Length: 97
Image (cartoon, rainbow, N blue to C red):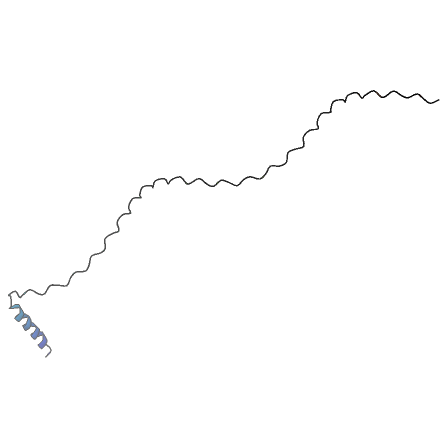
C-alpha cells in the first residue's frame, strides 16, 4: 500500500496528458496596481516687482513755537546838554544903618 499513491498519481498524469485540445479562455485577471505618483514640478519664477505707490498726503501744520526770551537791557543814554544860564537876580536892597 505504500506505493499505491505513487501509482495513482502516475496514472492521473498519464490520463491528463492524453487531453491535448485547448480549453476555453479563462476569466480576465485582476486589475493591476495603480502606478506611483509623479515627481513634484519645479518652482515657478518670481513675479515682477510692483509699481511704486503714490506720494502720501501733506502732514498737518505743526504747533506754534514757544515765546522767545526777553532781550538784554539797553545801554545807558548819553548825558544831557548843559542847561541855559539862569536869570540875573533882582538888585539888592539898601543895607540898614
